[in-house]
Length: 277
Length: 277
Image (cartoon, rainbow over all chains, first blue to last red):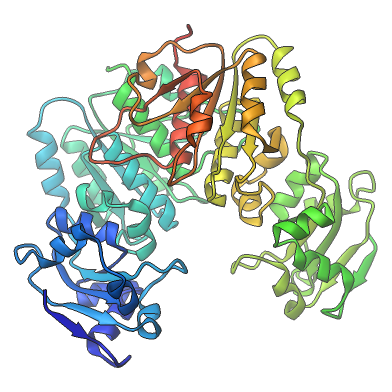
């Protein structure tokens, strides 16, 4: 394992990594920020291309875990040197107050909508997609990624205007689901929704005013769940492209469920209970 | 509507409100912090005792909503004067970066475990409780409160060591559910769990290693769902007091579900689908 010591805040790698907290800089660099050993190990295990790893000097000197050492010494998945930065430089690389001792810059992997639909079409049995329009909270997106993977959705489609799936908070809260779930970004729903329907999916939107409830309805084998922004919900344009809408029965004292809770409930129900139409 | 203008950071009301960001100070003052018009209106509508309201001068001068004006002028629910503070003093009262223009200090309302169990015992039909041990994330607690209310749980029991339900972040994320749901705080689970069982509830813990899955099991009418800390899960002591454990079937690529997602899924299922034993 080759080791570089970084000593200046002006070092170009440190500057690049610091820049990855901003969406535009991530886009320009074609890189995103990984914070912490656990997420780095998941990324490496799933073949995510990791361009650089920086460890805090103290964290490294205390002795890193055997599994991390092995992963960083594996030339096949990580052919680079590792970098050490003193605490005063390292602290500017992370976005949490909880120090994690390790950051990395890695290449995003997104999927084309056609690829997701081709795969879904060529596999028998139930298929579920999640489509998000304008979801803004990184924690919600990370949580929805985990639920989508947990309940066997075959892809996640994010509209233009939805929070960046490579936002550091999403990366943290998705806890590795980001690397397993096929994610389509920057989708134009006015063309993506018709393409999804043409591929045989029924598009279902959630709507507290819907006439039918989730648990009363027989649901098709190929279902795409369409969810909107936390405050404003779906745009009328997107909602108009849904084939039908459903509500989750809730106590009327509650205005609505959080979007990540609603997504999880529907996906759980589809995966485990829902009757097929 | 009487109006006081506050002009000094040393004003005792401003000092008191600033202090409510800390748990010990909340406990000592017997007050908690409400941020924003929406949550204040929910609190007043549900009979929460509001001791003081402070509005940012600019926010007030732009003209407050008719519904807020009516609520603050209603002597029955809010007999106090309102207070105005200039932006430079008001900014220290809030815990979000999103300015909300209004804060209030209100009296917490918690419920004794006996009261929750008495009510549950005297009402026919299915009854569900949620018991949290050591849940730390305020957003998770707020979300669990909303799901508990949405899916008709009759109470929430929080162990000693669980995040304070009157933490400002919980108050924000619970979005009013805090005022509708009976909440028991600082419970000693070594005595609370036996009392809950004695009241006829079966205590069910969630455990990814459980033999039975949620959707395969017939479940009792009176069920208390026991959930543990985000990282460490349940203590062995609490887990040993559960009557049975269940898992939610998930894709093995995912280690576990977030505690607020798991709680919502189980509560939804119990409220809508689960077969009764």
